[in-house]
Image (cartoon, rainbow, N blue to C red; front, top):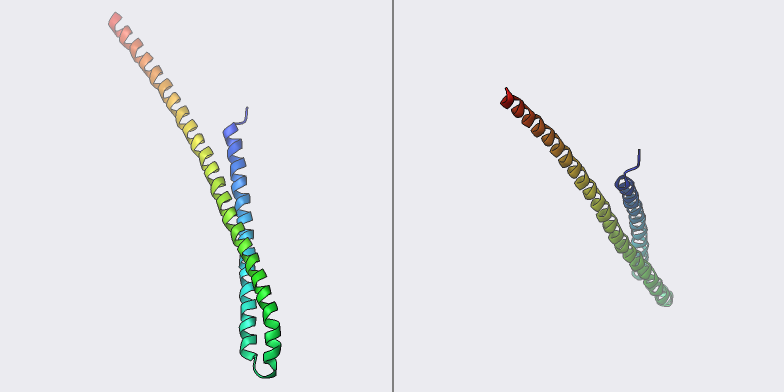
Length: 139
């Protein structure tokens, strides 16, 4: 028996949705990790700032530009991960739409097949009824 091309396409589309979901989940994890790294760095800066008194003040002043530069790097990395998440969300939406389109096509195909079957049954019933009427008219 020949394979239904729509069934094959449906399986492919469902696999694409699953892959997109996995990719998005991994990107969300990376995004959360980068957000934590940035927050930890900001926490370190706040802590060092609160400790920067007396002789430690000069050391803090020397360290602060490097800390800010590192914070900017972390922020840039986080922004990249956030953009990646948005992109992967868009991909997932497209994949879901594609899968839904195939599912609807399969549903239409099934309804059309049911309609054809029902019409054939009705035609057979109509023919049987007309034969019965023809026979009863001869008698």
